[in-house]
Image (cartoon, rainbow, N blue to C red; front, side):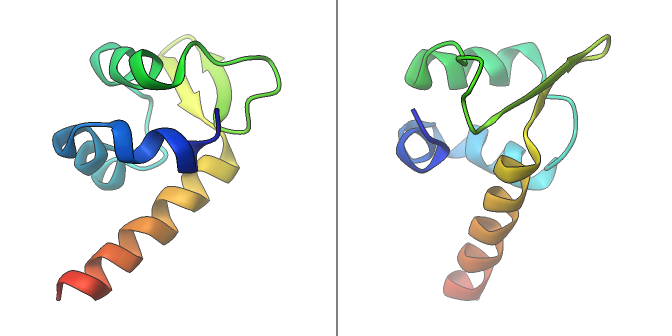
Amino acid sequence: MDIENWWPLLDPATRQWLMDNNGDVVPPGVLDQITAVAGHPEVDASWAGDSVPEGFLLSDEAIDWIEDTANDEDSAGG
């Protein structure tokens, strides 16, 4: 499932965390919420980045998408 499909299914606090901490290691609780709506990332999932010792990272594509979405929400809301 692509980020465009699961993003609206996340609760607002999770979406806000992802926008505020875009590019950071995704904490287990946030990752649990993502996988609850999107399923565990397949090897070719466009939103799945690397797993590093610190935890899970979103892909560069997903980070860019979230940044664009955050900018659109800021424009619409302000």
